[in-house]
Image (cartoon, rainbow, N blue to C red):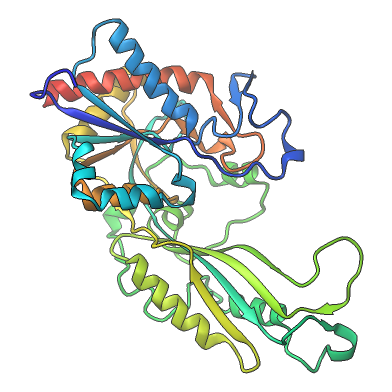
Length: 386
């Protein structure tokens, strides 16, 4: 704190990371950073240690040059990748929230469109994460003796999961779309003005075609439409060799991405009721919500913080940032909006090609240094607009 009359910026980031599996696909040791070909390779390089560190270096620079124009607080947590449960509980306490008193919350835990075209995130999808279990017989059975006569939980679970989408790739949960707002033609036009080349998108991912709801573009499907995906499925014998079993249980993990006005807890209840109803006689379904989930986030683009970020990009990148809606989720950002009631600015410096959550995660050296300059410019413009 340098002057209580000046605005206070709360920097949020996280130091926890995703597991490094499969480690054999890494070209270098995941926790020993290596700089090569203009990138920093390491787990957390882009998500989110590298982006947190550029904020620290920005503050260090401003202190060294005696050009810190406002107050700064840091909030760096270690549970973002698992839902920020500890921080969420912290925010429920009034005295704890007082420690985070600020005027703007600045977050760099997301990505730019490209080095040629900077961007500012104006929306995030919400998230519900679920684990499901289907139980059949009281033990694993011999598939020769019992196969064809006893319901196989893995087969049944696959059928149940397949039933969650129709032939048009719409989610079949009753009431799921009731709160989903259909954007106007003008809003859709603005969203699709973001530079995007479908052929390049498919080439980078190594796919022949894209799949999703009919009558929506890829940008619309990932930015303004909800999605349900199976993240993992297992059951029975998965080791080497042969073991002819009819498994007693089958399991799956699922994520549901939500859009504005959908409610995470309501979605959990809708899914639980529907999934339970899908189970045929002979098996027992079970649904477990891993956490409370999070609602979607929409950023106020008229707020001073957002305008300062826009000016910072224009100054350092010599180009006005476009506005994007990210398909991913940062659950704690929704909590900040609900409890701190402060402007949120999402000013990320990573790239979608950084391989976050995957082997060989990396963060561009150019992104790192231009990120430092942009953050410093943000503080300057914030104070000028205040």
